[in-house]
Image 1 (cartoon, rainbow, N blue to C red):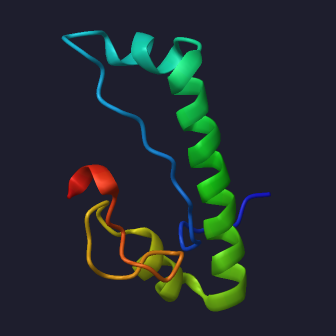
Image 2 (image 1 turned 180 degrees about the vertical axis):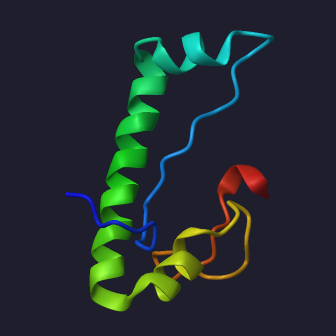
Image 3 (image 1 turned 180 degrees about the horizontal axis):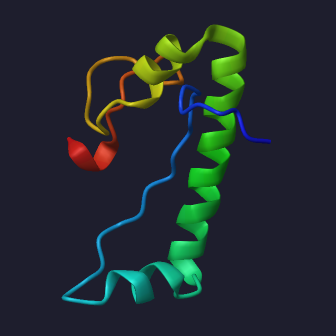
Amino acid sequence: AATGTGDFPRVRIGIDQPERSHDIIRYVLTPLAGTAWDSLQDSASRAGDAIQSIIETGIVETMNAYNRRANSLLPGPTGRPNIHKEDM
């Protein structure tokens, strides 16, 4: 349904940059397989968790938790720093 305004929260799932100089449209429309498919599934799950968080805690708190860099010392959605073993 149209709201008649652009003033509503959105949850976005981004894409990687194509390797080399691929056409971006072709890159986006190419079917996913293997690890790319797994990555999309993980991203969709994380987006669902973010939507639940928006409902339960509000948009600002959710943005602060989910929009952290991967190696941030600030708490992420789990309440722990977003430090990964491979970053150490």
